[in-house]
Image (cartoon, rainbow, N blue to C red):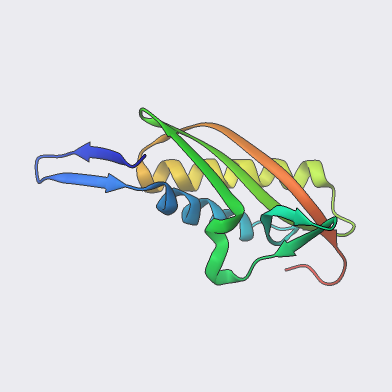
Length: 120
């Protein structure tokens, strides 16, 4: 359900897709993240999403003036998953709150896979 904010100049409507895109971009900017993953795993393999569909790897639930976010990612082989997840949580919380003015109640990081190769 979109969030409507009233100002002196009019109304601002923020949809869940906008929050999902902001969260997806913020997550992919973090070291150790190879990419966003599809929310569904097929045959035990996570589908790596392209840059144009970052919001497909994010679930958003808006409730009042707060939002909960679940992010599905693929991490790079050899990285410490707990540290990568911590950095993603901090980055996503900051970007969503500063861009939308909504408070972030909860962020779940769901690691769908590990991929070898070069990291950013």
